[in-house]
Image (cartoon, rainbow, N blue to C red; front, side):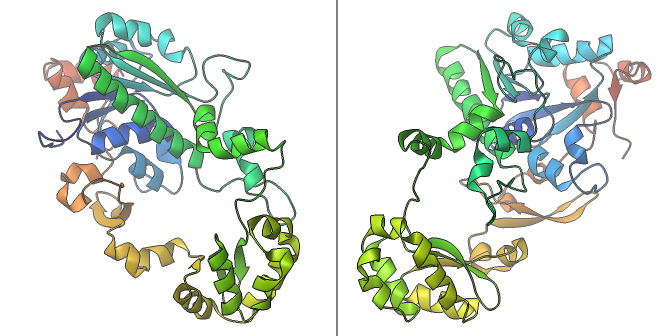
Length: 398
């Protein structure tokens, strides 16, 4: 069993994680990183999240990132004795997390009503795509689908105006964060008032909450929200790209001095935030022409000295190698069985992984803890081979 200290927020809390993919596993992983005993219930063939990206044995970068710190039990819920095990685990769990389409868990007799009947104060967290009501409720969903549906792609347009997908999984990750905070606050209510609850968090809801200010702007400004300020833009240099952010008047004046165009700051059409926004179409080409004359390092040194916010556009490799990343301990390097050395981004507000239990930094193999968990809930050693022979469970072969 993964070791824990007695003073972590969720020490002694058991979480039963039926979810697969990213959003649900992310929320459960965060509970695990704060001390919860998270039991990951996987199909016999494993969570489909283990197939996202290049495989390293039974894991991928995504499955490690969002499942570390958990224990895995592999169950076939279509088998009566597989369901029997799941129901026994449900009786003793403080939190149950599922991320199937609405009604799937109830079909197996593992829905909220069934959980509450055997565990009245359970916190039951359902994560889905569009919510459990409405015309889209039963549609399949991916991160990209919700990026398109929620309007997120419209803020990532290419130079030709085509909306673009952010080529990572921001909606899934943000949904996991919102789900985690919902479960965490529900646990506080449970311990204060003795009541469980059923929480529903959808990717659609999370995408909207993530974009709350932009959606509000769109509504208030009749579909044509203006930029927050100007200039804020990516500039091409002789050897790369640079972001500049001139938020206030003094920033714009300093920027014009740095690029050798002080007259721009005195030009009446660029006086003040509103006019710079209104005349951005003429301002940005002038700035781009100047920035294209020198390398990135030339500009960053001078802009920083002048108090103008800026940053080179870095690769992940640049980020990992940067002195600031290292000084802030923003990334931990640990050994992962079957994978090798991995780079794990430090969770904000938590101690360094080097001071955490070793199990927190690794993702389990499929069914790695099946036997251990079965023994904990009362199965005898002699029962386990029979369960495996029936196909109800699986144990890791590695």
